[in-house]
Length: 313
Image (tube, rainbow, N blue to C red; front, top):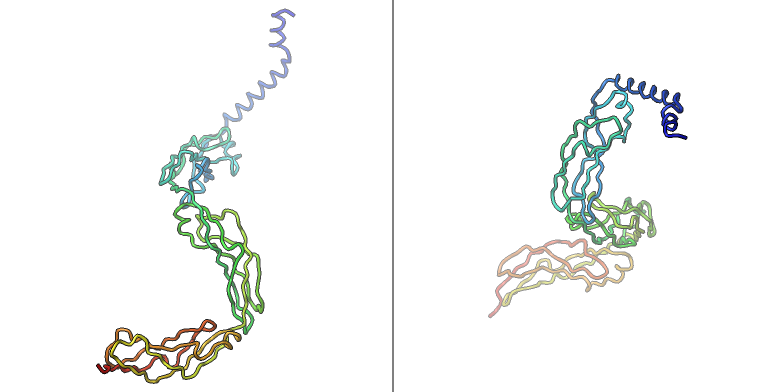
């Protein structure tokens, strides 16, 4: 086939298809050119990309920005949620407060839609170095045990969890909390797997999301009164004499049945502190040293009259 015939075939071959395509293109152009150009305000999501490793965002970052778009009325009517997105590249971010401009070029739009304006035109964000450390898990309880029982020691497994976030927030972190464990009506130890979390929204957990919490439920402490315990006079100055009225007090101690059974009268001591006092009449508060097995809850009377006299040379 000669060159001239090849050219003719290329130009005139399938002429009807070419004419049809041309006609459709003309019709489309006429439709589009005939549409009214309009503007519309939209609130669109702000997408953050390429945050440098080792940096943490501080505070609240805008989740959306306002844009004004322009285009044919038909094109704008077809814009759906998510078709327009503002994208902010943070690869240049450094520690401290930084200002990032937001221009129409940074807004992703469908074909035929033009960005006229972006508000705000810049976004301020703060960054800090990322840090992590372990803090204790502190269990929480809800409700009351059955009558005659009290809540004893609480524990969790694991006992600690690693938190991650901005350096300043990590330094402030003191504990990881748990959802409350219900002990309502309990008469025996309660074990429950619960969700753990952080009160500071700037922090997050590295791995653990739950913990096994054990709440010991103990028999309610009982009380026992030790009658007429002598009041000891402590830290009396040299060459001084002192006497207390009354000379004895009643001490109420509290503990469980076994511990109260082991408490002897000599295990709990009532005393007044005379440090720095000279001759005179004083009304002094009575203190008590608790035993290893029980604690003192009440002293009756809670004060005594103490008279201090000069001693013989």
